[in-house]
Amino acid sequence: MDSGAFARAYSQGITEELGPPTVRRARALPTKAFSLHGAVITPGGSISDGYVTVDAGVIQSVSRKKPQSVAVVDTKGVIVPGLLDLHNHPDFNIFAPWEPPQVYANRYRWRESDTYHALVRDPQNKLVDTLPPKTQSRYAEVRALVAGVTGIQGASGASTANVEPLVRNLDLWTLGQHKARSMIDLPSESGRDFERLKKILKGIQDGDITAFYLHLCEGQQGNERLANEFRRFIDMDVATPATVVIHGSSLSASDLGELADAGCKLVWSPQSNLRLYKETTLAGEAIAAGMQVALGADWMPSGSLSLLHEMKVARRELARQGHPIKAADLVAMVTSVAASIAGFEDKLGALAPGRVADLVVFERHDDDPYENVCIADPSWVELVCIGGDITYGRADWFRRLSGDAEGPTTEDLVAWGKPMRIDTGFQSAPDPMSLTQIRKLLTDAYPPVGPIFA
Image 1 (cartoon, rainbow, N blue to C red):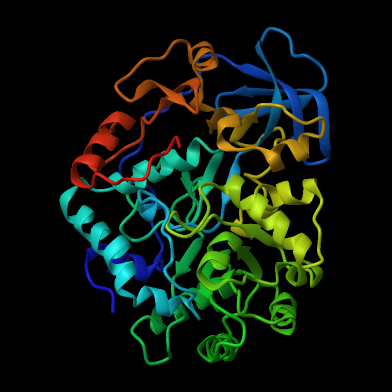
Image 2: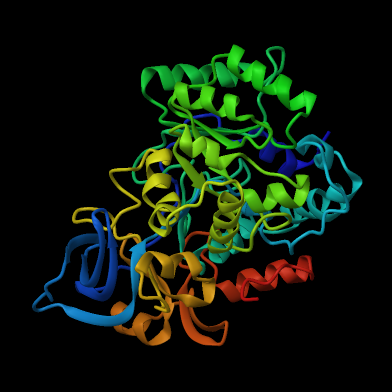
């Protein structure tokens, strides 16, 4: 069994209601309204020549008409809602990708292996004991941010529960509420976590919990342990409209149909499944059954380098399964569909007036804006705003939109050969740290930290 502070927190998940962060970062909003010009992906389709106008952190308008008396940046790119990664373990994303030494039957096999302990668990426990709190999660949030992710699921009990993160942690306090919970393992009825599960199910019934993320049936089809796990899941009445099944790779088409009938959702991480188990979820069958399906990059050791990379694996695998997906539908899996699954369909996942200004601008390399996002990689990211804050972007745009803002957490960097600028002005308990400071802490304690810009 895993031991150590981090491993215990990781296995616990997020099972209790959390209040607002006790330490909130200072807002870094631009001093004036601004508008971005380019191809815009909207809830009603794409606008080839549109304008997204932002003021005080909120989208004021999305229009084909150029706004007056507002600074306009002609991006010549594709403007999309911030991407949402609904399955990740951010605290592990300081590590370089792992080469699994064998094919595993289920997730319990590799978690019990000496290789996993040596490469992941033991180093992470050491870092938790050595470094200031949240250092790993801060680095991981930057990794997600520079690839266009503005919201991520999977924060552990060792992560950002009491401070405001840079990238929204969707199963913690988000946009004035905490209505999500998560568990890593389905507990047994005699286990210590069973009472926590019953409390979560009661919260779902009462409407207080709108998303419950649960790792379920992760491994190969036909595995007896996972088949028993699914039957326990059904018998314990955990299949609800708020239940978000993570992985489900051992489930049959019939099993997925049963989940769809119960209103469950699915988050799919094909890259990690294929690397660990040489097979993955029948996601095409889930979609055909009417399930909402989103994507997650899982974690660096066996998952994708970014959510953009995961989109490409998902597209290939859906085609292989005989369920090819349209570019617009693939983009929806990481924007509007993901927001709906997370319980933020009225706040995130779409560029529309009145919504918080979480958005990304990509370089344009394809005439079809949706296809452009599907083939993008992190080097195409030109600008990321979270709540209207200029958090990462081209150095010239960053200075222009932020009013030449300077500060101890704002710095220039070179990202895949491009001059970029980033502001990590979020709390890192007790003081905010720059990316340079975060990097130094990590690499001093653990030299083989996986690079962000590689």
